Image (cartoon, rainbow, N blue to C red; front, side):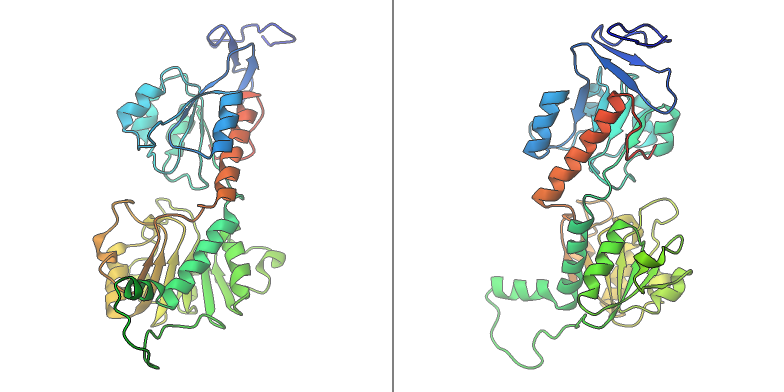
Length: 356
């Protein structure tokens, strides 16, 4: 039975929700709510931009994280009691066993992130929980960080900063702090999605030649003259700088391992703004110590923030604390995009960024 006006009529096991908001599951692949006064309860796991929290207060019944700590699994499950949606970040690891424990009331997970490797999508599908992400809006900011990492690693920026802060800069000579010039070099991109495409455009400003590997070749208007490598192995031997922009998954875990690192040109530079799981830390650190990889610029890590301590001991690493999307403009846009997805879900429409 369907709401044809101001009254909600039962269409199955969800006859009503708190007597104020009716959930109708007659429609496949979507949720439909008919507002009768109350607002959906949303668990917000981390501190969000003010504009986003203001909209949450206006349109929902949000439960905010007062001190912005990372919730334990038990805390999160308890908080979700009676909630209709969860708005998490990549800092929350929603594995299958966590999703299995979510209360039946939770019908949506609206991620404040483009990556969804922290959510077991199959487990969510099995429980008919809609999962969304926030693509598009962070491409420019993340590409900026990719270029920063590329330049910082190539020009030994972290070493120079440490010298000055420690008051150890004593001389200048033609041999002092010599790095690598990226202008005119070949950039290899793994993953020619949104961020990869923007990074390619920025790199062309340095007269870099663009090569890429992707699951499939992109259209010529996106390639803009970039050279496609069907096999990853041929790309590795062709580039002076390798930049990672593909999702993390079971198939891409440790994509950059010892065998593939050995295929890079001697003195190549590695940049990662995607996910730490793409890289075998031990293999990369060995290549950095040996000089086969001249430098690495990394914004993402395995097990962050508890990163492999070996990176800190290497002078030829330029390290950032996962700030690829950390601009005011982008963080606002991410939060509002997550809320757009929730708005669609609770209005019974298909959300634009559904991944499960």
